Image: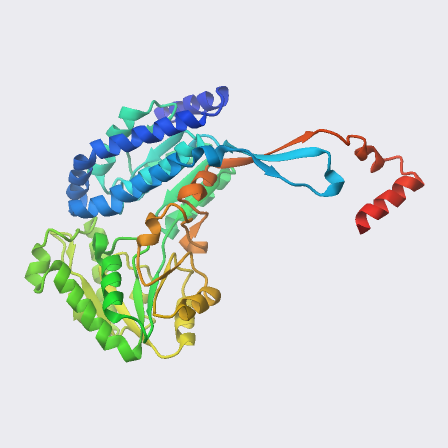
Length: 468
């Protein structure tokens, strides 16, 4: 392990242990400073992410900067409330005391962030940690080097090493950091790496928040507004070239409206990115894949799908040199094709049909619990029914992705799609230790009546307590 990492960690832990927890005013000051810096760095953030994978600047604003600002503003307005001790009642037999829960920072924490949304998925968890009063080590992804370098500069302008250390490096660096005894680890990435992170954290009995992924389905009912469904699915699927953990991974559409939905999806692709393949390849409004290996994997699962009988309704073009994969629609996809067994994490959208609701439940339940399930219907009955029959991190009706940006609700998955919750108060609580504080006021002699020596009176009293 790099000696500097270990030394910096020891310095951070010593500073945390030797000083009282930061008060609300200090935490708010840090968050407001972060907000100012994000806005001051806005053009540089746009340029860095474009350099890494050609994400359009407007998309950077809407999917990276805006959600982060909403998270900061939400925390700033509620830190006093979140930090306030919570009074709790007690059973009558434990009367004569006051009971409170104090929310204290866990301590030095590690954030390992991904490449797909390299700013908001790095600084969003940092907002939670700062709100909770925790010092942090931040490890951005090496697959977006321009953005990672920018984050290091941005955070170094704001925080000393006793508050925040941003570490650049590859997976070996992440493994070295995981050997340090952090109090909490926040990881965003694949389920495979999430298991490694969780095992490493367990060595130090550290708590974890794991934001993972999975195959999030979009269910389209026969009564859905097909144009709206296509518009929102297109937004969710082809933003960031499909490299989104909560992107609609596949569509389950009622057979009566399948052709209409496919036609509308084709129209949405043409409207957003161009009517011809050449126009779509040349548009500045469509991101690129993060790496050639990622593109080659997508190409492999697309070929496997077509070899298994799937048909390309639109798209399919891939250029390794440009790290470009065209927005692609697949129909007649066999459920056992590789593309239906793995999270796609790219701009390929399989469309499957169903006739009865049980078929929807069976298809979703055959796979690990998804991070989100999208339901398009004019009636709430289908969403409510699915919400009670399948296991999923969230149910979103008649829209996609937007639930991520709301800091008033918790965000997270289940089992292989995630552990724990983040955003807003849930994010604050992830970095917080709930400390019970009991203060005896009166009635201190009550304990003597329920302790040896056991006289007949005490035995009768105990019998009464148990029966009351």
